[in-house]
Length: 118
Length: 108
Image (tube, rainbow over all chains, first blue to last red):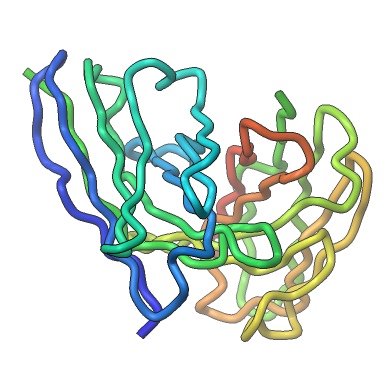
């Protein structure tokens, strides 16, 4: 079954860290560029980070640059997002998404909610 | 950064009516624009890619048009399951990959 399943969300205090995971199955993960996209409560979609299929290139939104790190383990078919120095404005549902051959986001996970609150 | 502006913010229509959604880019994105549908509590779903091509499994009532800076998503006859939020997204110039702010299609 072709799917992405995120995990690792939860409630965290400002300034603390959290690591999200995304388990991929049903497709060749090691050949796919992967992204994280987030959605604050009641808001639109915001691209967060991207990583090339082999991990050779990584890109970040200005809002998270220097605080978040995207990585992957192709042997485990898993994508990660390490989030440090979390702020209230990072509160959102975080989606893992695959960039397909058409170069758009053609597969999405169900998301994991991160709440940053004291 | 390319900014995508969608209009209207909300579209109130009845089932069977035609929906026309707009997405305007702050600079040309050629035809490198997609549309996504998002229903409450669900992840987005790719509908249209490269401005006018339907993704796999998308019904023919969905169509996209435009190039450069002005794009349109048309739903020819709204079905009950089409009431949702729609986002446009560009891949012309990155990073960042940017989305519009969304148009909500609601039942009138």
